[in-house]
Length: 558
Image (cartoon, rainbow, N blue to C red; front, side, top):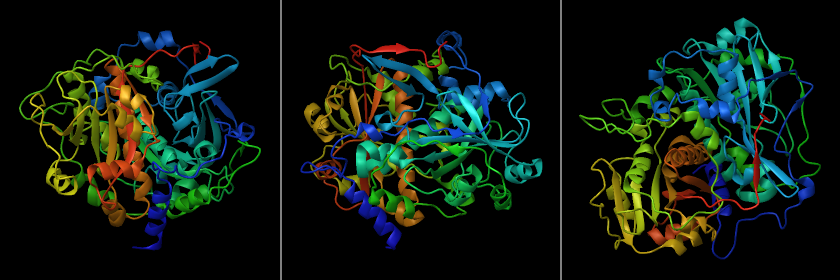
C-alpha cells in the first residue's frame, strides 16, 4: 500500500465516530467566525439571470418527474439565456427563506450538511444567445441568482475545449471550500463536503434532464486541469476552493465518449486575465491538519479510464428504456403526472418525522427500484460503480415485518455478503418483493431505538418509515483506482441521497441525509471485519412533522 492510500485510511479511521468518543471537532461553535455561505468575486461583471415565482413553477405541469428518467424523449434542448437560467435555478439556486424570531436563513435546491454549503459552481461555455456574447467562464452566485463573469476567451480556445464532445455541449465545474464545513464539524468535514458534491451532481443531472440534456462526469480530468479551467489554480489559505470535478452537459439524444477535455486547451487558460477577487468568508480560521492532508493526497492526476470502463461497468437498462422496465413488459409508474420542477423546488430536509405514518409497499419497492443503476439514467453520470448497497432499518412499511434488511444494488454479490456477515442472519426475501429486486431480511426485530442510536441518537432515524445505511465497497476500489477514489465513493452516496430526497417528495414523503453516525458499531453489528465494506452515509425517509414557529418567504421576492 502506497503512502497516499495510507494517508486516506488514516484519515478515514480518525474521522469515525464511536460510542466512546466522537471524531475531533470544535469545542464550541464560534459564531464570530462562522463562514459566509455566499462567495462572490468582487469586481467581476455581474449578469442577472431569469427567475421564476412559486406560482410560475406550480403552473408548469411538464416535464413530469417521470420524464426526467427519459430525457431523450423530451426533444432537442435549446441553449439560450432562458435554459441556462432555469438549469441553475433548478439545481443550485435558493429554494426558500426561513425565519424564526430575529434569525433568518436560506435553503437551496441542493442540500448541504448543516446548511453550510461548501460547494461552488462554475459555467464554462461557448457563446450563449441572449446571455454570453463570447466563450466564457462564469461563477454562479446563488444569492443573487446571477453569473459573475470571471473571464472571456477566443473562439479558437472553445473549439479546442469542446473538441470530442457533441454539438451543444457546455461544462459545469464544482469546487469545495472545506473550511465552511470544518467550522462546525471539524475533522469529519471532508466526508460531508463530498456528500454535498454528490448531491450537487445529482441536482444538476435532474435539472438538466428536464431540458433534454444529459450530464457526464469527466472522470479523467486532473484536479489541477480543472483548477486551471476555473481560474482557481494556485490559490492558498483556509478559504481556498479545492477543484472537485468537471461535468459535460449535452443533448441527451447524443453520445459523449470523452472523459476529459483536450489538454491542448489548458495553456490558453493559464494566459487569461481573470476578473474579480474572492470575498472573505471569515475573519479568522481554525486549522484542521487532517483535512489538509487528505485533500492533498486525494487530488487526482490525469487518467485514461473512461474508454476502458464506461461500457463495462454500466449494465444495459430494461428493454423498454423506461425506469422500472423488466424483461418483456413495462411497469407503469404512479408518478407520471407529478411535475418535475415542483418536486425539485419543494424538496426540504425533514427535521422531525411523524412516527404514526406508514409507507405502502408500492412506494417502498418503487423507491428501491429507482436506486438500481441499470434502471436509472441518473447514475449514468457516474462512470464507475455501483459500489454502494443499502442496509435498511424498516420501521413502518405496510406488509413488511419490522427489522434489518439489505437491498443489493449490484447483482451477484449476495454470496459474498453471506460470507462476510454474521452467520445467524436470516437472508429471507419478503413474499411481496418483486422478483427482480434483491431485498433480504437479515433480522426480524423492532429496531427503532437501535437505528437512532447508530445515527448519533437522532430520533428521525427511529421515527422514519425506513432508514438506509449506505454500505460501500471500500478497500478494493481504492486499491484499484487510487486515493482519488475516496471522495468519489462519497459522491455516489450523495447522488443516492439526492435521488431518495426527490423520490420521497414525489411520493408524498420527505427525506433527510444523516452524516453523523457511529461507523464501526454498525460494522460490528453486521459481523464485518477489515475495510472491504464501510458505512459512508445514512438517510431517513418518512412523513415530516410541521416545524413550529418557523415562517417561510419566497427565495427571490416574487
